[in-house]
Amino acid sequence: MPALIKELIQLNEGKTLEFKRDLSSPKNFLKTFVAFANSAGGRLVFGVEDKTQAIVGIENPLDEEERLCNIISDSIEPRLVPNIEMTTIEEKTLFIVEVFLSGNRPHWIKKEGPQGVYVRLGSTNRLADKELIEELKRSILGITFDEIPLPELTVDDLDLIAAQSLFEEKYILKEKQLLTLKLLAKEQGRIVPTIGGLLLFGKHERKMRFPDVWIQCGRFIGTDKSEIFDHTEINEYLPIAVDRIMEFLKKHAMRGADFSEIRRKDVWSIPLSIMREVIINAIVHSDYSQVGAPIRVAFFDDRIEVENPGILLPGLTIDEICKGVSRLRNRVISRIFRELNLIEQWGSGIPRIYKEAKETGLPLPQIIEIGMRVRFIVYLKQRCMIEQPESQPESQPASQPESQPESQPESQPESQLESQPGLNSDSLANRVLDLLLSGKPLSKAELSVRLNQKEISGQLNKVVKKLLAESVIEYTIPEKPNSRLQKYRLSKIGI
Image (cartoon, rainbow, N blue to C red; front, side, top):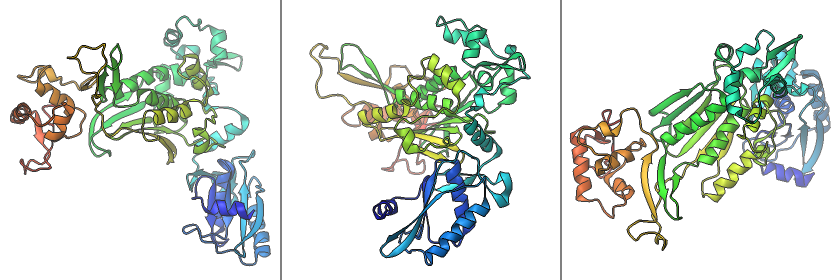
């Protein structure tokens, strides 16, 4: 045990670990016990400062142990029986209270009643809302939210034509297949849609019952949400929504051409395969019972954040899901995504994301629980340009560089560049505008590098001057036109 406590004290507080100096604040540690039991279990160590992690010990340990047992027994419903051990380190006595994920969840604090249910989010305890309490109950019964039948609806409330078009010739979606896939269920002698069926292929009833089942996408200028460049709302059927989100990301990504092999290959400034996995993961694991919580995709200059409603399922930690441990929040949605080959193997997606990030030299993605949501952060390379290699293959003409950056967004906002007076799509001016479309202000030197110029050319100076005169671009420091920190961005006319 001394070896174990030494290891624990070296760790930071988190989802499954907390330190307390003493037993002087029962309400606080009772919340932790309840949260551990409802979430993923954990250890609470008494006799250690929570901030400094200094060992202070427990005075009168035998009396305090009995007091602790009585507090737990009298204050938590249903009854919780954690494992309490005493250990000595540096001649000081500590309590290690281990709480396991409970099969009787949800537990609550007796004084607060059945609504006093707490869950663990990071190193904090959060009061669960009624939707989360219901999910805790379902997790014990082995039922997922999307499997619940809707007896007041009929088969006509599902767009089975759209569903069949996705399955194409794989098989015909007759009643038997729809029941097997649990898009439909037998209820009170009738065949009715399930919640999963409605979420996936519901007609107008989906918007009526689940108005927050949509995806909000935004492209922000810089690294925070203070200035938005473009946004869209996606209300497609969930399997189709994956491609729509990817189209939005491509629209604001930079695409380069790699000619290092016989055939040209597009190289993107964002990791498309990683983002596809992250988006599918968010759609499949969202808690669709949450109100006012759509899936959100935020594209910044240095990262892309994908948030889905719902904390991790009971028994899961971030470390475990990164290793491939998987539990299905939505069995119906997961099954449909797998049948459509959107999911290869349950639990393999996140380890594959981390593996690809390592192989491509990207910073490792980050997963955090924030509020009642899970946020997946994919960090981008600082430079979006594809650098030219030092040599070119013999099979290529000498005049053709091995890697030629196009540096242009896949698509543009509605105001097309071709509509700008006096500009040709092949001109240097148009290439400058393409670079500024990313939303990130650039200096002349930065523009020159991205245009593969060895230095700022006279032609570039003329083009910048012309675009300024036509008010297509503008200074970032207009009061100091000659400032060494001066950069350029698209004006409202140029956007």
